[in-house]
Image 1 (cartoon, rainbow, N blue to C red):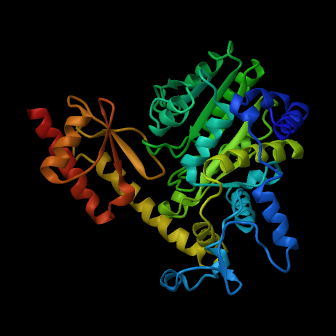
Image 2 (cartoon, one colour):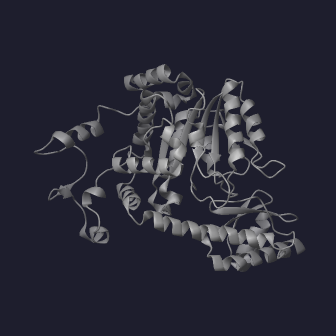
Image 3 (tube, rainbow, N blue to C red):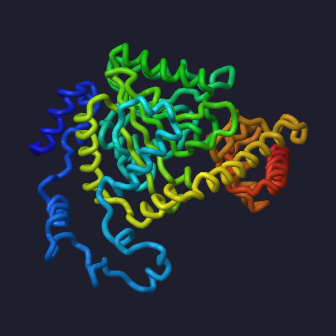
Length: 432
């Protein structure tokens, strides 16, 4: 084992031994090289005042070399803020700005001890890093039965972890915290579990209420007190798009410092929150009372980043930073929120009317980008194919009964027509 990896492991063993026990074999062996091209280039950047012949970029006239035809489209930005490599941890100013945003959006974080967000190539990359650091073959990854299909690829296929599902909703059509508790306690023999909490949920658009949130935290605490080490990951991809009386904060603050056997990790990003999907800017944030442990976890995270993508794209980090610093940011965000809220409310009003009878039943939703219809008497795939082939309308079939509809990408004035056609398609498929 590399001495740097060993040093990081010793820090974690000393500071938070239960978290050390959560690491995968890769997580134990990974480290960020301190004596390599990046570290030497960083040192040269501050000291090489005459010539700096270290890192592999080209320069011209004291600026990063670039094509005029590209710079002409980006003339509002200084070349040094878009063409150079970003640091593996991300642009420092962006990390600071995102941390401040996290506290503003989650006021209960103010009293918690957590690290500086590390920039990832959006949320999928962030989750992949978590999988690399903590998931070994047969480790349990606990998710609800209505989930984002990429979890299976990221944790199951890539890392060989065992995907353990529980029903998302209970009999009262609220979050099934008892199902989560049972799935967690079933891992007592393994002594370890990774829990993914995705709110607003993809595909259903559901976010629990405050009491449900407390029950989720209580279930994780029960598992920790039963001797299970829990990596509790909040996948906050759609954070902030809360349209009703649901949780208004991430569960990350409640999980931070919950128990010595619980490692709280927040994975979020500008991708959906700031409507910049193609920018691919996400973040990983760890919580711990130990500053040394946070530093060690960050170094291991940087090791994964260095070994995979080296660093994230600099231009998009600069674009997001400028947006966060703009005096127009809050106003424009509020405008987009209201558009999304009106769309969600319009969908709900249509489905709650007598317009479609009992044909278009749906799962509870109150947030995010999506909602899910629960079809009866027809398969979701048959309806999906019929919609596409006969009406030129796309939707996502999930399992036998669920049809996911993204109201996020349908203008409010078109929602009535959309659901009228879905209703027609369901009745036509049922008739045949």
